Length: 75
Image 1 (spheres, rainbow, N blue to C red):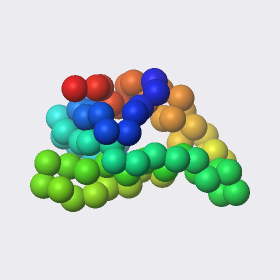
Image 2: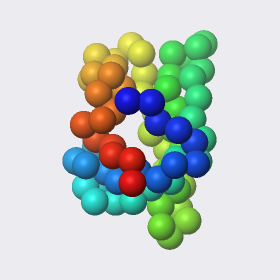
Image 3: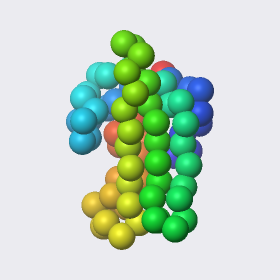
Image 4: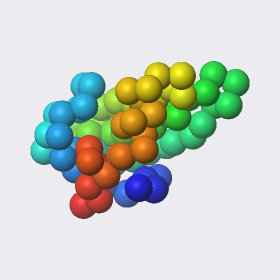
């Protein structure tokens, strides 16, 4: 799944600090090659920012990154 900046997503199942049913706007995303991190910045309905950082060296994180469609659905 390719997530796009400026689009709204619904959390399909709990993941880290994100709760099922929560509505989030993807404000920013990127990849830091030096650290091997996929970074996502979300804003919720109360205008609070939440970060999702998935690291290449973590098997669990890579599994999540490879299957983002299991956790997020475009609204």
